[in-house]
Length: 456
Image 1 (cartoon, rainbow, N blue to C red):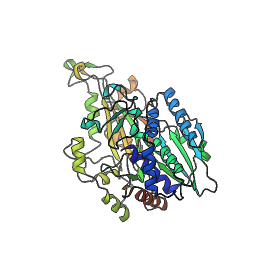
Image 2 (image 1 turned 30 degrees about the horizontal axis):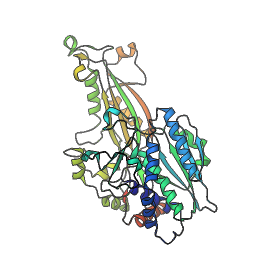
Image 3 (image 1 turned 120 degrees about the vertical axis):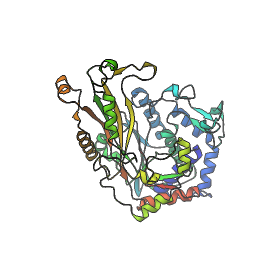
Image 4 (image 1 turned 90 degrees about the horizontal axis):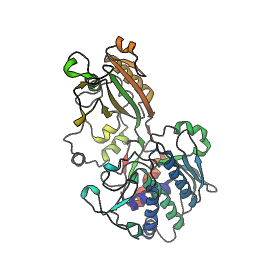
């Protein structure tokens, strides 16, 4: 999504929920376009500065550098600011108070990014932004010296870790505030901003009661999520949660030669493969008992919203180079309304040129379960454990000792790594309709409305 488009969406959301007033002799849309056109270099420069600081959540020193810069960026817009310390990385908090405010709006975004392996990037460093004259996958060339440019084509793309997820929305929000102030829009709501710096937000739950007064609001907007494949602005009214877990199946205490012990010593990789295969049928439906419990039929209004999403299944299959979706009985939007089970990693012994003819000592799988509002994480964890036990496995939470190994032929260690609940706002709620109408007015076209999207 271009910088101009992100700025427009951000401004529309804020106009809908926090600001009212009369623009000086201009419509909101024309004032927005004029502001962006005359401030492109400043907007891109601020984004480049933010992208140039590494933001892997485990790199606490650089994460704090991000937080300090973001605090200063908010302060320059007139916010009262503070770094809210947590058990992990700090939350960047800011508040713009308005006399006689009708409501308080809380805007959330995250400033951390996924770990970045420089060898996987087609540029010198993922934290040195590169501007291209189009999409990388289309072979677009670098644009040298872009930091001195005054104008930027909306089809150009800026590549760096977290450029889209989630630093550009933060800069778009701040640019939107600048545009509104320059255009003479009077605020009618307090605006609170909280920027999260942790992968999966593990410290957020404990921080909320500690900072309840600073985080209380009437309306909350999350600046995150992909634009729809159609390129149209997108509003999502909910997100899937997650439940992360690791499985380790055990074989011999040390790896042994398959020529000497094949057919006799159990192979944990095969044991894990059988366990994983028991989780789904060949049509992609999860076989864990009660996995879909609680997910009921949609209201007619919700079904109509799903039907209106302009998905292009053929285009997506071409993009991902797949022959068919996993669930052929569901559209993409229908699939997103259900919990999902995903294997995100597998490991056992060595592979490739380093592979050896051994029966390995263990095999590991890393799983995430995507939750919806109706499937709480605690109940889902209990159902999964029951399923594993039903497959004949003895479940442990730590490395099994020799006595345990000698007693149980099938042992699996299950470690739950974290969870976040799914959530959803009713699309026909007054606040939802206000935001939708404002985005439509500002951009001149209706946004794509998504009932449930991903998270993290």
